[in-house]
Length: 220
Image (cartoon, rainbow, N blue to C red):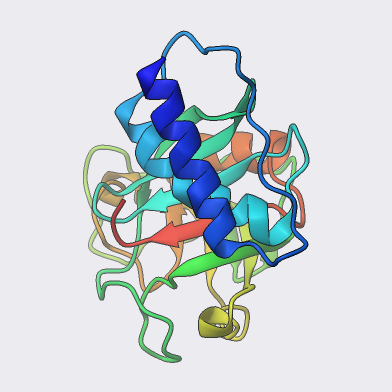
């Protein structure tokens, strides 16, 4: 009971702080969930911020990225409470995080899926930005090739929705599969969000849609 009340208080306080005067507070069920993890409690204020700013639907899911751990969480709600449905291993920029143009850094803040490219394409299909070349390339899983990692399988076009990251689309920041899967789990990209190819295909084909929110954080 104490855990539920603590999380509820945290989320309501967050929503009250962020909301405009006419925005309704977040409603949370008084029914208890079996367990609320420590990570879900840490993610709660970020989920609440998206909820308050953009009015998520009851079943709508978001992605929250933890740069320090090189992980991304698919987060929704269960009985009104934030719940992690899946954790993905990712790779962000080797240059760190930031929103400056030509910095080759991974953007920070709330982003949104603008378009999805490559749905249904075979794993390992190579892309040049959003263009599907139709060519399949080798996926390296146990060693890192000397040549640079290619964009593969799916490409998710992103746009910023906060004043600090509105240049995200112009910076050509994408979420995509990588031909060098051995590099996933550590910062190796030039600003994009790299993912394992099967994870990228499953997420793009079954979960994401234009309008899905992505919260990029350096640390949670």
